Length: 506
Image (cartoon, rainbow, N blue to C red):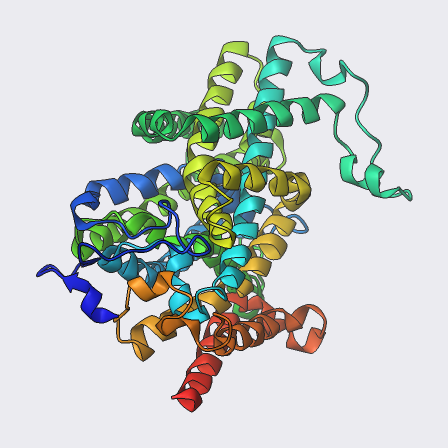
């Protein structure tokens, strides 16, 4: 009930003293509303958070993947790639800010915020959808870190890759069993380095976040400096920026470019569509709406574009230097002959990957899995579940090539997350007018029970319709355009259906 909470002059809301929240199916300390006295994150904190998360290898691969020629990529020029990235990040900033607001105002994490629109138990649907995507990202980051270790060991011991035998045969041209397809083309030692890096991530989850926070304070600038040095090397080896910026336009007409531009922008949105949902997990600690919003507005588009530009320049340079576009920085460093340079570079990759992985891909799914059974699943257990599911999603297949990474993985899941975002934004901003009864978010008989065992079926149906609109183009070629606009199709479709259904219920 609203009388159980107090709104401070700065707009932030918290429960009055003495209000009890104790339902084990809906509450634990990790999911509890953050008290105003504990909301201490500043503009710098949020800017640093985005800088740290954007300075990662997937960002680099995202940018360089746009430059890669067909069939591996759309074959954009560096300028076209950077404009695509800037537009995509400017667009995704809008839902990020929209869903950040309730976190700062009410101090609640994403799965609890979702209870307002989906119901106290129905919120498990968007929470698990979001968690599964995070698991995929966790696996991708662990695979990248494992590849960095593989390259590092190979620089110290050239025979390392074949220590346990040759690479598994490729399944490109010959029939394979399921297992052979899973390990196709990879050395046995790659699974060892993947396991080592995976284990380091899980160990940090179990040891706590304090060590990671300390590392992240210097990880972001360190990674940026090292990448800048790599850009300097690339420009020097390519004899200046001229060869990098003068790459020919591969599109005969604007229409040809538009066909690649639209799904690429949608993929850019998909890159941060995960955070556009669960930013309340971070903004619940904000000192004010102004500070959290300013920190994100300043850092996200600028950082993504600058770091992406580095990836574009380096990949373009690799075409000049090696005669092919090498979009994976780990593979690129593997071409170097100096063991010292390889060691430093791989340490940089490991630091960047480790710090980003825990911050971006563990906090949210740990909360999401805890939301399933707060009494039984802790943050540590949620982190372990994330790691196991991340392996099961076979991340080495998700990023096997730029085309699959951008036009299958990113573009595909953006439709599902966009469908969730449409419901959340419509409910909070247009139906509830930013007013929530915080205590009832933790009660099975409160306002958000919806008289349907804690599930608002209007939200579930709207999300399903949004997903269908976003993904139907995969099975009906004539509707492919809906898949190219997956995030928009899903988000706008779910919002419209949800508004219509809730209006009928009123």
